Amino acid sequence: MTSLFSKFEGTAGALGSVVAVGGRNPFAVVIEKPVSSTVGIIEGRETLLFGTNNYLGLSQSKNAIQAAQQAAAACGVGTTGSRIANGTQSLHRQLEKDIAAFFGRRDAMVFSTGYQANLGIISTLAGKDDHLFLDADSHASIYDGSRLSAAEVIRFRHNDPDNLYKRLKRMDGTPGAKLIVVEGIYSMTGNVAPIAEFVAVKKETGAYLLVDEAHSFGVLGQNGRGAAEADGVEADVDFVVGTFSKSLGTVGGYCVSDHPELEFVRLNCRPYMFTASLPPEVIAATTAALKDMQAHPELRTQLMANAQQLHAGFVDIGLNASKQATPVIAVTLETAEEAIPMWNRLLELGVYVNLSLPPATPDSRPLLRCSVMATHTPEQIAQAIAIFRQAAAEVGVTITPSAA
Amino acid sequence: MSETVESVSALIIQKLLANPKVPRDIDGNCKIMEDLAFDSLAVMNFVMEVEDSLDVSIPLDKLADIRTINDLAACIVALKNKG
Image (cartoon, rainbow over all chains, first blue to last red; front, side, top):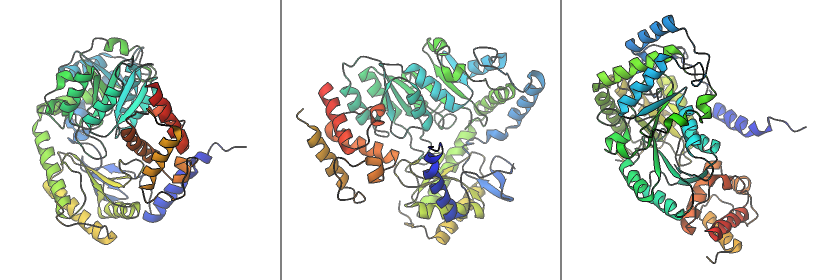
């Protein structure tokens, strides 16, 4: 009899060697208690959190917590239904109106997670005979959405509008609509997409453009509307997808658009129709966090200053950090044999970051992925840099001092 | 449009051999993932290089059926003839 589980032998072997090299399973870290937005108890120790995507620290927003408590008391803890059946309460529609208004768009759809927002929107918009053009470094939710769609899927070189253009031109005369999918800030590397250049390609080729602002919402642009706002091209972006689970500190996904047909997308979108809607307390907390974010633009200024401090610190101690200083800063190491002990040592010394191993990284090299928060203090960032320096020295990571 | 499966396969092998980690004795029947120890992402990135050289786009669903170097070459030739 063929075992159902033989396909996991590779995973078992790989995980076994990761644990053997470093002593613990990096994918089973438990935050025993969050102390604040920036500190959690891990393995009984107070640990600086530099890998939680909680960019504005709003997971601990007093207003959001209070709103959640009140909503749970008033409405209960769950909707027990899908958005298109009994799962839409006034709170859900109000949040959709608030999100649409924040982006200055006609309408918004709220999904139960950011993953489902991409899965739902991409698979529903791109049907049989249509063509999807995905940035090579797209998030798994974008790849999975494209697999769920019946469209033909073409991958173009990461952040390369010329390569996209060439691929679109090859399809000249082919029937079917074309949808380009890019991200504002790439989650693994912190690379920012050249949205204005993608807009130019879209206009010239008659394609549609979807921008996933998951990591750039609340982070880029004068008002935090993301990479498209920063580039001044929002009107030419057909669909913005994003998540509440980063800068707003809760959970859930959304899509905003000026296309009136979004109303019909709701009735064709399986990841929206066949899942329970978000519970009232999450919707209320998200609505409150959105207000917090709009009321405190200084959080964004502090976030960028903090990102620059951490980035400059990494460059200064000779680590191979991301090209740009954004709230996602990846330190690239050459081998997993360096990255695994380094990640373990960082955790032992009191800094939590994300360990990303190939093939989940863009260029076959491992990453120590860090995310910065507006609520990190300069002292916490300095401490994290000092711990990186110490861990790199103890583990023997190759460094090139003052490489930049 | 004079590419044949043989000529495309030869070009793919030439590109693969530029990578010092690839075994020296590969031929068109080699399985890309198993014999060359490429992971899924390495395959997609390598295919992108071939696409740029030959001015063709291979849809991801077609990639799922490709196992050997000759499969990849045949897929490219079919796509080019269609265009």
